Image: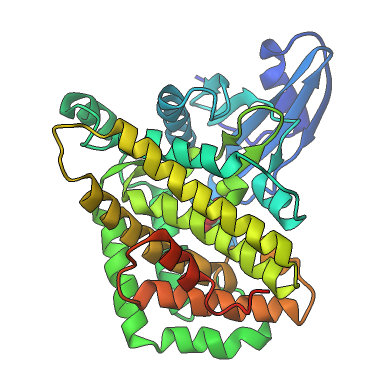
Length: 382
Ligand code: SR1
Ligand code: MG
């Protein structure tokens, strides 16, 4: 047994060395260090990434103590999602439970989907692949497709984790209170205060938090935003599975859709009509691919496909609304909006809150087009 210690570039290199071809020639930290330390270790003939869980989460003004259980959770989720959709999560080269560290395939030729969207770089095909990934892992770990015995075994590994509590706080609670972790531009203060005083919104949010806590529908990714997708020369990879747990299917779909809506709103605010349409197309491709793949996987013994999909869409819309709001007034923002100059930034922030609120409290959406229109209704899209 090895006692846990936090890696530095040297110790991360020593840890990775047995899994690398040739002599180590470089080791550098490549992550932001909020939850994990991430290093790229390079040898003469190849490189790997070392990801180590830290015993805390850095939040505004302090640290939030955490166990390192999420390293195991991520490892298991990589296993399970990797089995269901081969090649769409990074390959695990080695895992050390004592050190809470994973050696992963290095995606050095890849860039985050968010970064590409921010720089208005077209990413053809990615949205549909992520839609199919969602179908495979979400429906694939649901009662519709997976046998009860198989599901029971898997279910015992993934409890309601500490990171679920982080999500509860940052997505479902803090943005609707005067929480110390909230961060927003001073111009947005009136909107932030209005959220805390909005009874109808707070009731709807509380109901969604209850759904998040209780609806163990599938082994969801749990943090599927555009920064969790890496785009490169081969199939995209979905990364950062440490938030995985058995939760509502609509949560992953809602988060991804919300992040695309935030991208469209941001490009709209700076007047890039072409890219707004590009991103709207990605959102539709994502949803259509998800539905098409679910249709293929659906079991003939379950004659309620349309009802199932309608329910998932309604959930996705509401969770999307929460994600849009928290990315403006909560702790974790998105570069799509934060990178804008004024006045575009303020315009985008207000539009995100308006669209997000409309999704959370509005009547149930009946198709994806309605979801998208509502998400972007506060934006004067060109
Ligand atoms: C500082 S940790 C906050 C956020 O980062 C993760 O990616 C999740 O989205 C979490 O809410
Ligand atoms: Mg992440």
